[in-house]
Each structure stands twice: as structure tokens, then as C-alpha cells.
Length: 133
Image (cartoon, rainbow, N blue to C red):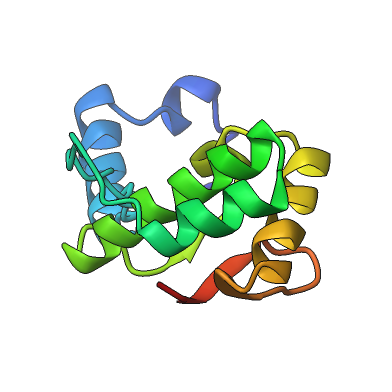
């Protein structure tokens, strides 16, 4: 057995062999599943019922426009809940269109008027637990 010095050309792998090795390697690795993005419902609301009790209490309390806007948003979301387009009523900024300060005051007003009951979680958006008609 004679040992000869190896040259770089002797160690080179033909390109077709390299491609086959890479294909085998990629096939052996599990493919990553892409996260499925939740699709938003295309459910559109054209009208919603405004209970007389809500009208009377809001008028008697002389509340601001943010509270009226939140009341209407709650009723719209409740209608979506009834139609099973959503799972729960979440009073987020996207749903209500109110700034955090105005939303907090409006929620407190609706709770004080005993129109809604809410559940608050630290660091989470306020959720409506019950509506009182």
C-alpha cells in the first residue's frame, strides 16, 4: 500500500452526486407547517336594535358621546354574538374605536347604569359578561 498525497481534485464531489445528497437531506428533515392565520368573518351588520331601557338610562344620565358610541358597539357585538359570528364581546380599541381613556370611562358609565356586566383581566381587554335589557 502506497500512500500518495491527495489533491483537492481527488476530494471533489461531482455536482450530480452533491445534488442527490442535498435532496436526500432535505427529504429527511420534517417540513415546517406554516401558521394558519385566522380569517376574519365577512359578516356585515346593517342595523341593530336599541332597547328602550338603554335609551332612557343613557338620556337620564346625560352621558357623553363616547358612552353612546360604546353602547352602540356593545349592541352590535352582541348581535354578532347572537348570529355566532364571534365567540365573545371584547371591548378592544379596534372594536370600539375609542381611545383607552375614553373607553375606560365609557365602560364604567355603562356598568354604573347597570346596562352591562364586565370581566376585567390584568393586561387583557375588557370582556362583556352580560347585557341587561
